[in-house]
Amino acid sequence: GRERAGLGWFALTPSTPGGGIAARSLLYWLRDPRYVVNLVIVPIAAGVVVAPLLLVGVPVEYVALVPAPLMALFFGWLAHNDLAYDSTALWMHVASAVRGSSDRVGRLVPVLLVGTAALAVSVPLLVSLHGRWMILPAMIGVCASLFLCGLGLSSLSSVVAPYPVSRHGDSPFQQPQRTGGGLAQGVVLVGAIVVSAPALWLGWAALSGDEDAAWAALWTGLATGLVVLVAGVAGGGAYFSRRGGRLMEFAEST
Image 1 (spheres, rainbow, N blue to C red):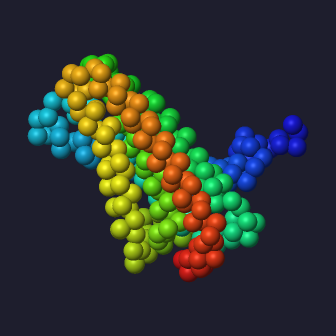
Image 2: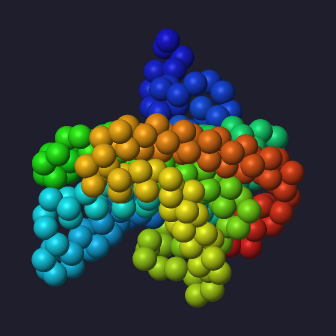
């Protein structure tokens, strides 16, 4: 209606606490250079890994299958410290007693939209470069597992182990001298790979020519990813609700 005209993202999201957080997060992800740089780095990181493989002579049809899973992994990882970017603005969520699950879900919306769109384009394109379409279900399953598992673990990590980041207005490449975030980063990345092991194994079998394994990888990857995502949001939401005061102390100290 007219009341919602001119509200931008707030007019497109539900009129709920989670919808409001999602709209605010979308604004941040599209306008804050710190978020924009994170998004740009994802395809660059995938390219950095692919280039050496081509240089040492790995066949193009196999190298073509590498970027999409890497992008899925890094997209899921991007939100692992999302709460730290709020700084003292976090008090709005804590003071208004927003449910932890609403905070967790709302914050994941931007990266979920961007990551899904990027993978929806890149996965079919890269599979076409590979040349065997029977691998498509496996690729979708592997990417879904890495992406969703990363989001679930990130949703938990960003409230359990947040660490300082560059302040709003500072260069996105300027990091605090002591961030202490190495462990959280590693746990989310390695954790997403570990819990995605079944889908990765089935994907490897599909690459060897097992068509049944390709479909098994699809359903296994989707199921694993959704379970970890829901568990991560629930766990992170519960922690947010119980430890709001501690999170405020962190926000005020950064």
